Amino acid sequence: MNDENLIEHAIKAYKNAICPYSKYSVGASILTTDNKIISGFNIESKAYPTTLCAERVAIFSALSQGYRKFSSLAVVTIDGGTPCGGCRQIIHEFAGDITIIISDIKKDYFKIMTKDLLPHPFG
Image (cartoon, rainbow, N blue to C red):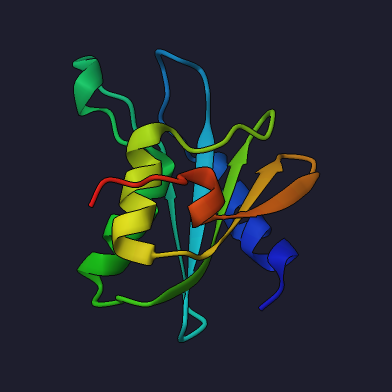
């Protein structure tokens, strides 16, 4: 599996984001060690604290399908934004130190590791 394929899945998810309040779409795709790709997108609620980020949707979907080992995660936004603090903690707890690909919708991307994105995680 190459990075661009994982980014493509994240872009497809990005296009389905439900973000009527922020207008900031995010798509994410996580790659399991079995080469399965599971995607997610951000879903906003009027009760804003109940909103879910794309990264958490992808990771929780993968976990709910029985996957526990991951090799990389792609996150796509219009401007190449990085995961929020809450998502960084979830990535650390459930995916470990994996490659995280940060991309904009034009596929201009860079790679970072979980430990570099969250150098002093809780737990």
